[in-house]
Length: 420
Figure 1 (cartoon, one colour):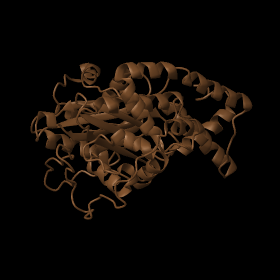
Figure 2 (cartoon, one colour):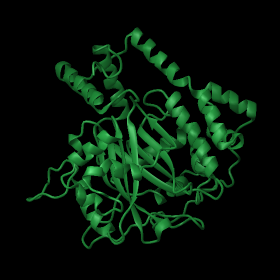
Figure 3 (tube, one colour):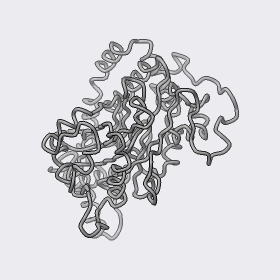
């Protein structure tokens, strides 16, 4: 069973943002709890989880409720059911009320799963690098790798047996089978025009794939000519982000207590990084965005090989959500390496896909992702800092996990994940 994702957005009570940040910040600064002060403090023992791959808390603007209002984002990827995840999250929390009592609608730990369900948002597109891997199977593969390295004194590689390669190919065929159904459902929901235009927009720079190159030639599909040979990025790159056009929204850094550092993006602390973006969808473009998301979701579920999204091999999980009744688009990503290298890889491998996703967003650069400095400025301006970020395997890249899994499966040929 593939991992599940949970995205919860819940309003923070008026005047409670500062108090909530004072609870969350120490958790994020000491995710393992090794610097617990005498007498303790509210903490979530994420490293003890047996099912959570990644998790984060962030404080977002809540513009629909007012300029001074905020909401709490809790986003996670986990194995099992939502009910089990909610129960584990409460069990891992030393004082769950210290966090959740600051938000509206919280009814205590006994109805925590129901409270989460009241505020859950379903993804419009969700990519999973390894659909057959759980936290336990990934950690088991790490242990196999470490044991062999200790025994041999060096890294070694393994190739799957022919039967395993055949089995993997068969599973990919089974995954791809529902694509025609996806297409019919998507056209029925969003209309042929938006599906057709959105899909072609995604494919415009994917000629390295034979089937996409054929589609592009038959439809004469290509990116439009650049409007300017110069970047539209602001010259002063140190200036604080500002709305780029009327109606654009830039994340607000709410009041921070005296002596407490302002929120940061919490990058480059472990092997993985996290990215949370919220952009405003332009007027009458929500259906177009949903159509693009449907195409991405279908590809991610049906065709994407393990560990690669259109050639991008640094993403563990990424999801997009159309929120606030279609007015905004949220991206939640867990990836390897630096922010700069992640965006560069996206721009290199799926340039037209970036335009398809965000070209309807207010403030998007006129030349899109081809104007890379302006595109990066657009993303940074709409990025939301995380107060807490957790990874279950903080030293493992996507490539590490793939190599470890091959070694594990070669030693225990019972299929992905081994014997259980």
